[in-house]
Amino acid sequence: MNTAVYVTTEAAEDAVRLLADQGIASDAHEEPANAGTLGVLRVGDHDVAAAVEILTKSPGMAAIRCPECGSLHVAYPNQPDASPTAALAAKIAETLHLSERNFFCHECQYEWAEDQGALVAAT
Ligand SMILES: [Zn+2]
Image (cartoon, rainbow, N blue to C red; front, side, top):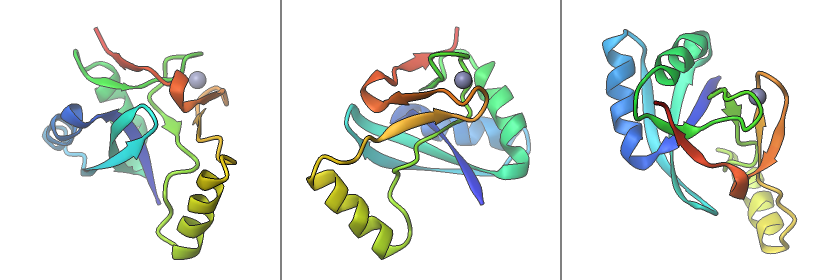
C-alpha cells in the first residue's frame, strides 16, 4: 500500500531525487487531470510522514496542498485503479459526468474539487 503526493510533473522527478537523498524510496508517474497533468509521487506508507515533512520544507516544491491545513498528505480517490473493472467503472462515471474527482485531506478530512486544487509552491 502506497500513498501518493501530487506535484507538478516538473517537480515529480526532483522530489524522487530529494527523497532518495534522505533514504526514502519513491517513484513518480504522470497522470492526466482536469487542470492539466499531475505528477504523482508514490511513497511507502511507513515513509509518508517523513516524505511529507521533507517536501513541505522544500523551497519551490509545487504540490497539491490541502486548502484548509496546507498538508501535502492528500488523496485523490478517483485515480485510475489497477483493476480493469474499476478503471472501466471510472471511465463510465467520467463519461456520464458522475465523477466528482475530489481531493481529500488525510490530516483534517477536508474534501475539495480538483479544479480548486491549486498547485502551491513552498516558500
Ligand atoms: Zn487538511
